[in-house]
Image (cartoon, rainbow over all chains, first blue to last red; front, side):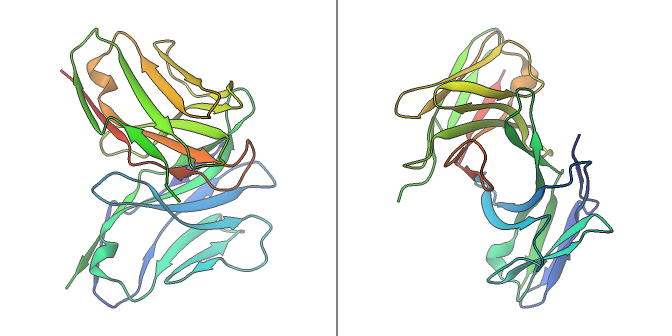
Length: 117
Length: 113
C-alpha cells in the first residue's frame, strides 16, 4: 500500500521569499508518480506539478519545483518568490492501485501555507 | 475549455436521507473518480468509473454508489446518511483509465444534520 506523510501542519513565509513544503512517501512499487495539489479555501484541488519515479530531472512548473530524492523517499515542493495568492492548503499525493485494479490518488494530510505581506 | 463541474455546490441533509451529487468531466475525458474529504484530512478515494463501468472502489460502505452516463458525466449516491458523511465531495476527471494527472472540480460540500 502507498502512504504519504506531510509533517508540517502549517508553514509561514514572507512575501517574495522561497518556501519548502515537505513530503515523504512509502511504496513497494518500482514505478510510481508523485503529485502536488493546491487547495484554496474555495475547495477546488488545483494540480501544480508531477514527478515520475523514473524521471531523470526534478520537475519544474513556473515558480514550483519538486525536489525529488528517491533514496530518501522524499518529494518536497519548493515555491519560489511567494505571493499572497499562494496562501492555501497544499497536498502531496501519489498514484496507487485501488480494489479492482484502477489507479487512485493517495493523499497526505496537507500543509497550510500562509504568506505574510 | 471548461473544467470539471459539480453540482450542487452546497447541500444540507438530515440523517437517514439520501443524496445525489453530480459531476461533468472535462470535455474528452472518459474517466471520473470520486473522493471524500472530511475536515482536516486529505481526500480519500471512493470510486473510479471509466466507459460507464466501475473500475475501482475504496473502503466505503455499500451505502455509497455511483454510475457514469454515456456522455461520461457521473453521479454519486449516498443512502441512509450519517453525521460522519459530512464532507467535501470531489470529482476528478482524466483522459483515460491509466493516466498521470487527475483534474478536480470545485466539490460539493455536504452537511448532514
